[in-house]
Amino acid sequence: MKKQTYILDSDIGWLLLAVLSVVWVLLGIYWSRKAKNLDGFMLAGRNVGLALGAATAMATWITSNTTMLAPQFALELGIWGMVAYSTASFGLLLFAPLAKRIRKVMPKGYTSGDFIRLRYGRKAWYLFLAISIFYGFTWLISMGMAGGILMNAIAGIPYKIGMSVILLVCVIYTLFGGLYAVIGTDFIQSVIILIGVVVIGFGVLNAIEFDTVYTNLKNDKPMLVNVMLPAAIMAVFNNLLFGIGEIFHSNVWWSRAFAMRDGIGEKAYNLAGLFWLPVPIAAGFIALASGTLDINVTSPDMVGPLVAANILGEIGAVVVFGVLFCSLASSIDSLLAATSDLITEDIYKKMINPGADEKVLRKMSTRIIIGIGVLAWIVCLPRVGTLATVLFFAGPMVGSTIWPIMTGLFWKKANTTGAIWGMILGSVIGLVAYVQLGWYTASLIGAAVSMVTVLIFTHLNPDDFHWGTLNEAK
Amino acid sequence: MEIIYFSEGFLNVLIVGSLCFISVSVVLLLFYFFRDSKRKELW
Image (cartoon, rainbow over all chains, first blue to last red; front, top):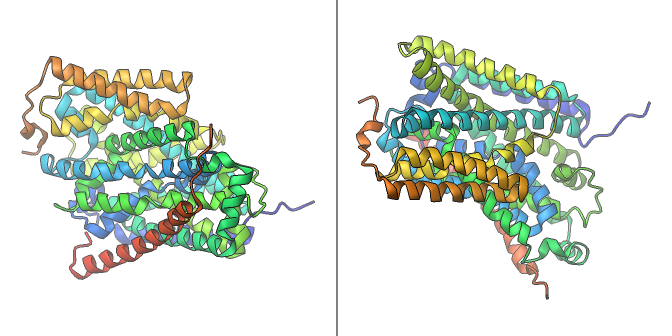
């Protein structure tokens, strides 16, 4: 029987998987000593400094999509595709002033849901939770599936085993150490990812003549270096707004704003945005070199690993495996922790058991992390492989939350009706655009409709919100 | 209509600049880590 060849030798793949898994679990157990109370477990004691704060924001935002989809964007949309992907960093940069504001108006807050409930009331809160949990769960599943697919494609590790291991490892260390473990591992993962991208990028630059890549592109695929490529330019704005919507509404980013020490949030998110900005460009360049190297690209999202392994051999494949594993783990752990916080705090404590004490909530949080992990695992099992589409489907929904959140945090006149209708109309009309016009218009239209709706309702019936209401603990 | 291309120089600066920027990011991250660690301000 003919043995199928993979980018990385299977034995080395299994060894790497085992080593990385054991290291993350041991670190989770080590940091569990710090997570003594609920604030420690959910928000790392609300005392996270600049280095860990910036690293966790950046590592979480570098998903497998950044390292796999950015090369695909470059391959299909050229230079603009790389730039389009890198605009997602604006979400982090623009969240920086929000992080400062969040910490100021809600010093004892727990979740993004807390903010919507206190600012706009229960109806807006239910709608927001539906959007946020749908998005978070979809992102989690897409990462789980990506883990299984990538490990199978790179090292021949069976899909179900690869997917199960990465989910299980992240569930275990999040379960032990809570946000302490998530943030601690994120720092190490971010350093591994950045060094890996630099090694591969300079390796490719060293192995090829840059002018040959450029000439080949201009002769064989001139559209990729075309300054005026309408679909790609549209993708720049769509990706920008999708990224902003994802970050502004998601509890993944709010929980970090609550977790960072006073005065750190704004700096940490600015640094994370700047550090993230060049990563898709470096990853995208690897794809542009594939034509010059005459590599047969069977699947566009595998172009990055293929080029790295072709140029750097076994070492390149090992680096790619490490970078992808870290990209996946840093996002999966954050999603587990943040979604669990949202369900524990907003659904269990606020709707089901308002009298629950810290001990009960901690126990509940543990059960919810396991529950989310198991549910994600069940949905991932069939290997549907089309969840990237579903994730883009969430684009207009999250885009519709940008204005209710931004105006709600800074503008006392913003009112509840505007927030609710902004989310509803932005989501619905954005989804119609997704179906009728294309994915690259959906977030743009969803955010624009939401903006107009929020502004009109606020103009017609301005609120006079008292900011002190947001400080619930007081 | 005549096609306008990104120049080779622009692409070169974009790629090499990005890789250098990422290298600086790693150094800065480690610098902040050791500084915070020394001040006992990691978390």
